[in-house]
Every structure is written in C-alpha cells, then in structure tokens.
Image (cartoon, rainbow, N blue to C red; front, side, top):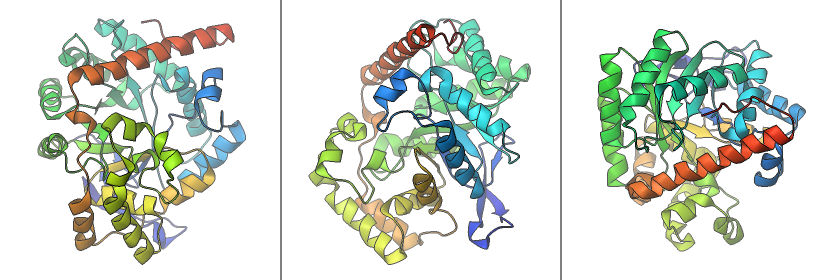
Length: 367
C-alpha cells in the first residue's frame, strides 16, 4: 500500500511513505487520517461529547495543525453531528489551499430499502460538504436485510455519474469484502479501503486476520479506526477512565487483561522517547494500515502526528504482536452488529428532530 516518499519543504522530519488507497487513483501524503466524529455542533453534540461542542476557532486551529504535518485524509459520516460534522469539514477544506482527501459514509438504516435512498443520502452529503464529488464514499455497515451488493451497485452508478471517486467499505469481514469486491470489479468501481477496528487489542483475532489477508489479496487498504483503543493504549489511562471507554465494554475487556500489553507499549515508548499513543499508531502503520484518529485539541493533533517520520524495528513490531489481544468486533454475532446500526439509526433520527427544532432544516436527508 505504500509508495514513494513525501518530503515537506518545512521539515525533513516529515519524510514518510505515501499511501495509495487500494486500487483507486487516490494517494495520501502521509499514512494517517483524522476522524471527525466529535466535530458536530448541535445540542446533542454538546451533551454527548466530553468537553462539549468545539468552537469554530478551535476547530480551525486543529485543522491547520493537522495540515501542517502534511496530513491530507479526513473522514466523516452523515450521522456525525447529524451532518454538521460534514458541513464543518467541508468549510475547513474549502478555506484551505492545501490538498485534502475527504471521505464520508452512508449508513444502511432499517428505513432505507432502495438505491434511490443511497443516492439521496450521497447527494445530501455532497451538499453539506460543498463538493460535487466525494473522494471516498464508505458503506458504513454491511448489516441490512437487503444484500450488500445493492449498495455496491448504487455506488457504481454514483461513480459513473462522477459523484464519487472510489468506494469504501466499513466493518466488512472477509466474506463480505469478497462479495463487495466481486460486484465492484464487474462495474470497474475501485474500492479504496475497508475501515475496520484494527489495533493492539484485536490484532490476534482469527476473524480479523482473515479479513486482513483478504484485503491484502484484493488490494484494499485497511483504514484502522480506534487505533489507540479509544484511550486504552495511552499514557493517561486510569481505572475511572477505563470504565467509561466503549471499546472495553464492547469487547468484554477487563483492565487487568491489558497489563502485559500496556507494559510492552510503555517500555517501547520510553525507549523511543515517544508517547504510548505514538507507538500504537506507528505499529499500525508498520502493518500497512492507515490509522484513523479522533481529535479535539491542537495538542492531540500534534501528539498523533508524532507517530510519523520514524518506524519501529521489525523486532519491536514483533514484540508488540506477541502481546496483542484478540478482542475484535468482527468476532461478535451478526445481531450485535445489527444493534449498532439500529442505535445509529435512532441517533440520526434524534439529530434530525434536533435540527428541525433549531430551525436548521435540510441537514439530514429523508430516507
């Protein structure tokens, strides 16, 4: 997945392999991306996000900091902030002269039963981001009574109309990835990436390993969400913070099961003069994946960018592989993944009502 080298005129420390995304024509200047889950600005975001809504000035500074490190990949979704995350991301990208690869997602909710629903959602996302074509349009989940092939065919139609450059998959296991790839190939639709949870908490999962091998075989880049385990692999984890981390709850993880892994990460961090998060992110890059990190401050953006410009040695990577856990969300039953879609659908409806009450109409499309 890595090709060539990128060198900033500002600093030779920013040298790093660039990434070509799958079999698409899209490339990233740096092998890392930033997610915008907490960039929404509705009343719901004020209540849900720890620290509330990010101000426009803070978000502008965060975006500038990210771009100052040569990072070009930004990921959003129609459900993030009820579409306000897409709006804010689009405005930031439009105000910058630096290049950006913008991605967003379509969620196959229980209310969506046709290709027309896919196209309505896509056009609404394009309008919110202020663009005529989306670089990567992800199918947020393969779980739906309709065959996933329907959504891939809809994406192919969108690509033929010039509305998307490449398709992205999200939370697709090996079998689902093969099914999507088969249809995409029939329509000459490039698949840029499969966005899955990939980190030191789930690396040794057999289901995950099968998915990774499939993506490599089919030339689909892995975009790794939760690369630092939502804080489980950071320096400042405490028992109190642990109890509130969703990744631990989703995988049934206990804090004492983390000790050997965290000790190894910490030892490498101290040896390298890096943070634990930087080591975890660099490990992800060393495995050919593109880590996707969340960010709510300039300091967080700067720390995440500290994973660039250096590499763990093969022996260091192997030492982390040996203590990695096997807590993959792909191991769960289909009904559990269906709950995610159902809850996300309810949240999208709540956002729609919130936006209507506040007088901000048209942010979420009708299903």
